[in-house]
Length: 352
Ligand SMILES: [Zn+2]
Ligand SMILES: [Zn+2]
Image (tube, rainbow, N blue to C red; front, side, top):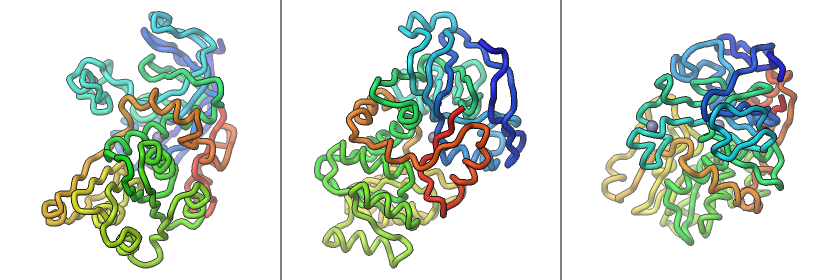
């Protein structure tokens, strides 16, 4: 095992360097993994820009990255008791929760009441070292066996696929539902597949970016160009005036939340996974009088294992999301491509 490794280090907001850092050591019930693929997430772009000061990350310098796959290189004490061995192929996820607070005991570890408390909770790539490096340490709660039929690049997209399955579960999609999804980025597109897997009869994706609209259409979904007229009126016209049973807000901007609520059928439900960085005015009167439901959806909670067979069977099409690949040394170029709306980027795989 080498003593140093290559890592992407964010020195301060907007300032990146790929440099040699010490290889971390796995502690009790942790593994050290050789990272083979890591995917750039919208949260990475925000975090690197410094959009969550003092929270994600708590301080700089910082190594981000939380959607990854690789193979186990070393075991910390006790990891073997959980069935892990060196060489196992795994996909990682970020929430290493305390496991003992009431929310963790209820299975909602994404809402761990000890969030961010040192020694009790870590969120890799958010408040603890992430996977944009040759090696990463993860607790055994946060690694999942990668089936032989899936590549490491597929494995890096299991975390976002689990988030898509979680938002569809939070939306309570039922058989035959019409589901409207605002935002055709990776989470929106993966949620569209997850909605079909949960029995949706019809999925409509709302988006303004031409490349993403084309992608959604090529995957077989109905689309609405939000830059062309009133998207709420368009969805109503497509549904005989009734609206959608379920809306999934995957864009994270105020107007998207307003559209999501506006296009719902009476008694409909909106699950929001986008995280607006400013306040949003919502139509409270409509929520009350139409008995609408609005729920948040944070990361995933139990869906990593559950989404694996759906990905393996091609029902959640992670491979279709990958538009670009870069070596870790070219991370700055990869991020610029990710942030350029004209690049057509959906998911970018970085290989350390
Ligand atoms: Zn992510
Ligand atoms: Zn907890």
